[in-house]
Length: 157
Picture 1 (cartoon, one colour):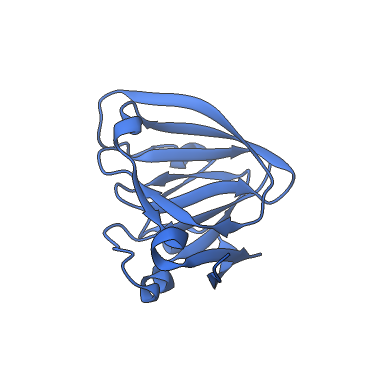
Picture 2 (cartoon, rainbow, N blue to C red):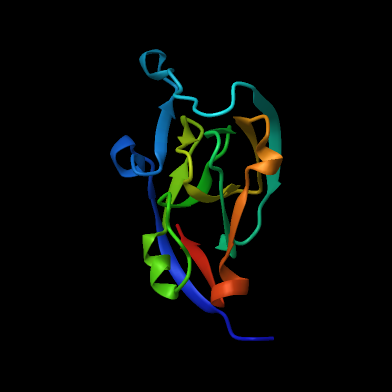
């Protein structure tokens, strides 16, 4: 097995200001409930369930035709993101990656093109409400960090 370069990222609290380059924070407050959905006219809503696994990101996904909104239900999660338009063609691009703790008091709406991984549970498991463009199966770019760069991102809490 080949050695893998591990790039560490410290998870930070989710704030509107900190998350602004990546999308919209959706706090569960009545005056903050407007979601800026972009892209497809039809959206797909489902519940995703994730079991705990190491917070080790070997790839990132991006969607270019519609936003994606994610709401953890009842348990905190970690979401890894990188700015839209980032090309992961060398290890220095890993410095653009950030991680946020998304707890049960808020959700996020990923901006078009934002690279992301997760949100994955900090505890044993989490259910997520997932709202994204209906054509998401054909709107998914993948940056394979481990395969193409020989690197992974690990999150410190």
